[in-house]
Length: 107
Image 1 (cartoon, rainbow, N blue to C red):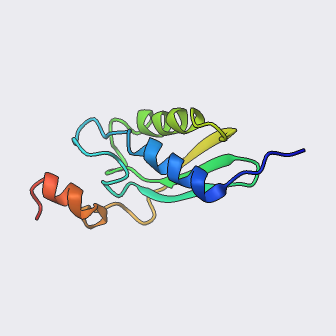
Image 2 (spheres, rainbow, N blue to C red; image 1 turned 90 degrees about the vertical axis):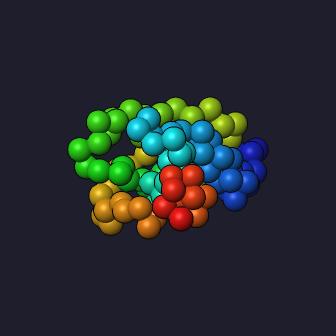
């Protein structure tokens, strides 16, 4: 008998885990920075995170997606995690949450 997976509940847990990942150059988590474009959870419990970086030449380009995958895989009910990096659309500071803009002095 297959375990009944609550996709919305898992998605919330994935977002909470993502909020623990920070861009090392900016003291704001990557979710509030607007770097996460989409979070999908499959019926099998796989998480697919579509994300970007603040710049294509970001020195942390390899470590941030790996950190996201690692944190998401730790969630009970998640079988695997894949962070896909895209630069379309390119990130700009208007994608940040109001809290992030306030923290960085943009408001």
